[in-house]
Amino acid sequence: MKHNFGAGPGILPHEVLKQAAAAVVDFGGIGLSILEISHRSPEFESVLDEAVKLVKELFNVPEGYSVLFLQGGASTQFALAPYNLLPDGGKAAYLETGVWANKALKEAKFFGEVEVVATSKDKNFTYIPKDYTIPTDAAYFHITSNNTIYGTQLQEFPKSPIPVVCDMSSDIFSRKVNVADFGLIYAGAQKNMGPAGVTLVIVKDSILGKTGRKIPAMFNYQVQIEGGSMYNTPPVFAIYVSMLTLNWLKSKGGVAAIEKENIAKARVLYEEIDRNPFFKPVCEVEDRSHMNVCFVMENPDLEKAFLKLCDDKDIIGIKGHRSVGGFRASIYNALPITSVYVLIDAMQEFAEKNKV
Ligand SMILES: *Cc1c(COP(=O)(O)O)cnc(C)c1O
Picture 1 (cartoon, helix red, strand yellow):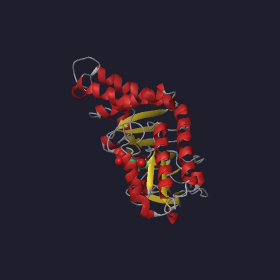
Picture 2 (tube, protein in one colour):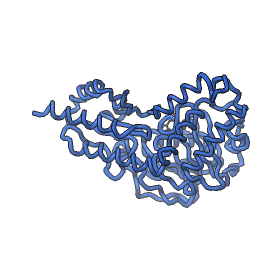
Picture 3 (cartoon, protein in one colour):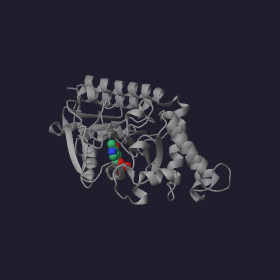
């Protein structure tokens, strides 16, 4: 089997893939595929109920929050958050920590004023800005918990006087989070929660309905809440596979247990990057991501040769994003620590072979 370090769509647990494959042919022994049953059938309704229940359980979602499974990816949420939360002529605050944060704030400008409270653009987003003030007159404060491309992560969430909106696409369910500290959490499923095609939204009900704006049904969180994520046909298969993945996570001991594993995986890999003279880290130590580990080579001319060695060892998807270069090893929940050790072995072998 391959060691899949791809950034997204990312690795899924093998047992989930086997269950999903079986359900494509015959879903739960009913003689029909999961792909050809009604979304209003009791069979699918129980899948959706179970998925919502697992999200609430794994993330300890308090009363007063709704869990939605929507379409359009996290990129659609870049627009839906301001559409639903930012009144005309109002202001929203954004922390600019990378490409995704930047895309999010650009969408907000369609709806009102945007205040960028801090940015790490000056150093190509290799750190998380910390000294800033959140304006109390803004409708919300938008953050990106993990910067998939640059390999930085907020290790602490800001204490905010206004609702916090968080793009958790690339670290959702990787660590414990106090949902009550957030007004809105969203995440495209395809990094750490399931396949592409569905987006998780967790929204605090009391922050809705304050813009005075008319919002078309599909873009309106309130309508989606009332429809139970079934205002229209939901992405049945993507929700099913997400449900299986959440169930897998629960069987592994839930978020607290996977967080420990994720920390261990990240630690051994960063240790090797720091130790191995051929490689060097990219980001500020205190802001290093536990999901996307970015590193480069002391001698960039050797990058191709290292990629070739990785390829020979079935290490897949570690080429860095074009805006950073070098390498990015995404070590999402489903990636076993044994794969991380295979990568570390490859780095050591490469250093041994090339030393002068
Ligand atoms: C991948 C990613 C996105 C984009 O997600 P889509 O579902 O493709 O729209 C947004 N934000 C972050 C942090 C991501 O990692």
